[in-house]
Length: 323
Length: 272
Image 1 (cartoon, rainbow over the protein chains, first blue to last red):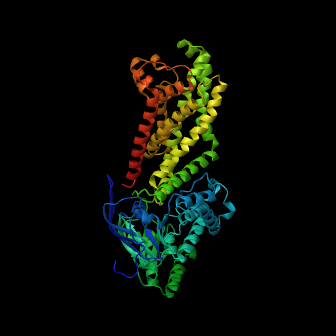
Image 2: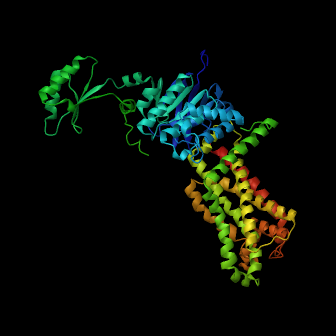
């Protein structure tokens, strides 16, 4: 590491194979700068959770090296544990205890003295808007409240690096927004965050850098705008109603916009790549008028995770999403 | 993984263990039905074996119903300690499933403490159980004849057995695939609990079972506590029953040591 700024997370050629399952990580390289929010994006089974488990000292690996906050994960796991916070896919707060009791419990296990633990708990309950529910059992909390409590627990010792493993999986949209806001606040206070997710939108909103992983390797990396360039720009999709001539419609569109649209015979759609100029909207409007269609048949679609993933790996993430 | 044992690390180890134990005790207080559930088995056993089958079983052993109840109660105290293993296994299996164990493993916490805390909670719960069962036994006509010292020693042996079975339960909880599996294995407690000098004298069992039952760690505790409570004497004059007190210490200590070491080994294996 000859750079003047030490990375918060550094993985070099990390491989991990489970007995009978083959390689889960296959020479994974990852550099996360201090104070950044970095996304690990990929479908289920890509190796996201394995990566997080290795970095949080829960799992040994077969080859390569891993550093967190300047500490070797293998040689100094205790040093790493003192500097990290972990919030998982499954909230590990205790259902039967209250929010305050959970925070005090984990604060004590972080070796804070009882009085400090109590103050810290009150502090975090305020910060995560949980004060009104502080003394109720967690069993009665909403999904979003639980995740926020989980997040609060992971921040007890002001970690340098925070790991969030699919922090919003299974949450309703409102709770998701709540968690996003909390993560944004953390990031603005300078904590390094490594976040795994299946949602491009989430990575898009929160992360400064995204590593897309598949089969245990990084297949693409960059900020979200850079990743989207892999799949080109926004596309316009025209739905052609049943009984109309799809190919004829395609020719009509081509005459207006100057290039042949992509045809999807099953979905009965014509897809046109936007070229960034406003004029193309007029050309599309002309095509719609000539075809006797309304704006209901027109949709603008931004590239999403599936598009990037499809482009990079030649496969969709569909089917692997189901467990 | 293990840091050197300085006075401060020892103090943290003790504190960690207590914090984890307190969590389990708080959970128990929030769900008193679970404590009630564990207590219900020995209480029901007192009623069923003491009163329903009491006369018949007593007659089979040439004892009156009340003599049989006096014989039976130390056995039931021991059974109660044995049945606690279910709670331990379930609790550890649940924490494994929910990710609590993983979260604790990412804390700068003494690894033994997360298990030792469970065991401490078990021992404290056992004391509460005995504080309820002993008076209940007296209601059923059982009278400890020994002095305060021997009664305390008997309670000590019972709790020691609970400690040993607690570590067995912790190990099983770390090994089973989940709480559902833990539930299914619970039935295995019955042969452990019954093929022993608990409900009926081992001499009345088929001869091949007698040997097994006599060597059962539970029998050692039952016989030793019967002696200390100075109720009816042990059932057989074998070497095992003559050395019941020695065995009632040796068995649980041995099981605790082996259970603890295997549990720690298993904990370390989780990072494979």
